[in-house]
Length: 256
Image (cartoon, rainbow, N blue to C red; front, top):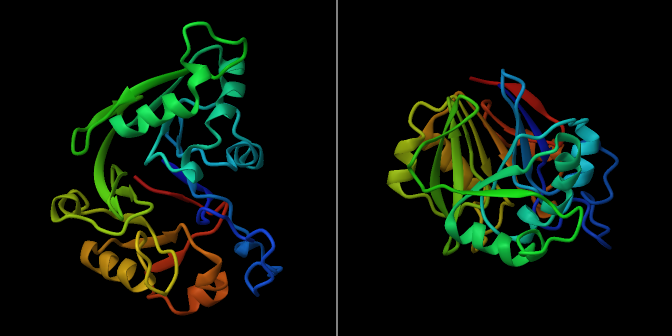
């Protein structure tokens, strides 16, 4: 399968509105970060997106995505769900609902935030969403691909990570239990959040992310959900171990 980073920034994105720091004013395109999301292109031609943040519409246009088959949601914070309404373009083109997979709390939040999509009498053109509840450590199948969700904590909020084959994606993690770590044994490529170098209440810092990566021991790891406070892409890359890389928008790689 092919993985494409649609966005690698934190909740405000980079550049941050009204900020004149060296990162936000950088001319390096690697320092322009939309809100965190990835596109998974399966070998059978199916497309799966993890999270539909506020930049979802532009991310789909920029990546040239012509069809969407499913969405996996990590949690209900707005920087991960706010763009969900724009799946209606795919509804129209494909003439069917889009399946949305997540835990109970996130699905309930979607029904509150996008209430008009679930009302008994629907306004013409609202998103067509088929909600599918999943549970941590219970595998499920999408289009012949097995996906294993697991739980991490974003301060005290449960957030879903996903393992697909030898690839795993984690965002907004601060704490990972030993049970969830065991799910990651043998992962070849690991994506994990690293907000900044300074201590943060609900996100991995650089040191915490690197310690976690060393414990899991993947062949390659990418950092995502990056803040402007972390520094430039060039700076981040210069301080990382050889097998760890700062992800950037539109970065694409293949994995199994």
